[in-house]
Image 1 (cartoon, rainbow, N blue to C red):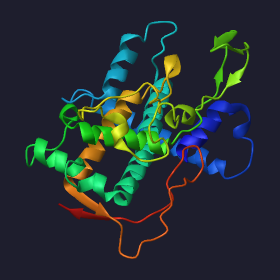
Image 2 (cartoon, one colour):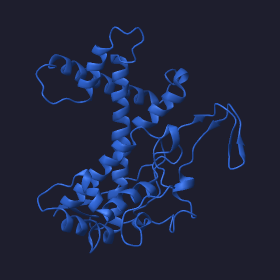
Image 3 (cartoon, rainbow, N blue to C red):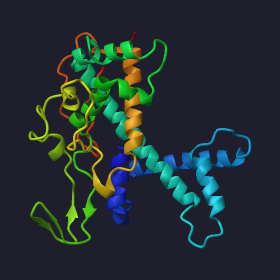
Image 4 (cartoon, rainbow, N blue to C red):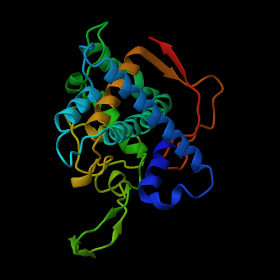
Length: 285
């Protein structure tokens, strides 16, 4: 929900604050997050010379200090608060929703989760017992990496991207887009293209494996959009999704509770496409 109101605010900032409705609760939530961020900045400032570990806030404060005498410095507390807010929006709701879809797929397709040559078998064989999976391990866990990518492709949580404004006449495959046109990118057109994927409407990690079982990523995989306006959090999201998913698979066996039925894959529509509420059991392995 936070992402939906954040998008609406960016598209219609001049009107959204004045229209009554449930979205006002969203704006209130945004204000709460910004207040939390300001408190964290204050704590960093107070403990600036006591902490050995440095994070994003430390580095941003250092840039503010370094450029404070510049007449138009881009570094100030307001920009820092918004930058951290954007990291929260890009790195929490979207990544969390993708993981929800991933867990749902794992309980609906248990052969992918744990059977021979599948995710848990691969992790058990190739990761030292007692050692957590790290991001570099994706290179030796091709099937697990393929599953993570297929979760993103198949769930397609942001099917319609943010609007873009065409600043000049542009031709794409002989189709003319006039200057001033507002364009809404449709990621689903690539992620479900039958010319690019053998089974576009089926959850199939083999879409990201070559004939020898090595991981391969296709050009049509664009859940983060593409071009100059590609999602700035792409690398962060990829790292988060692989780490959370692989370590969850290493630690737990997931299954549906007894008596579960009517599990549906059609999403709940909103700013992002979420799975319908479901229960699952996580059993330590």
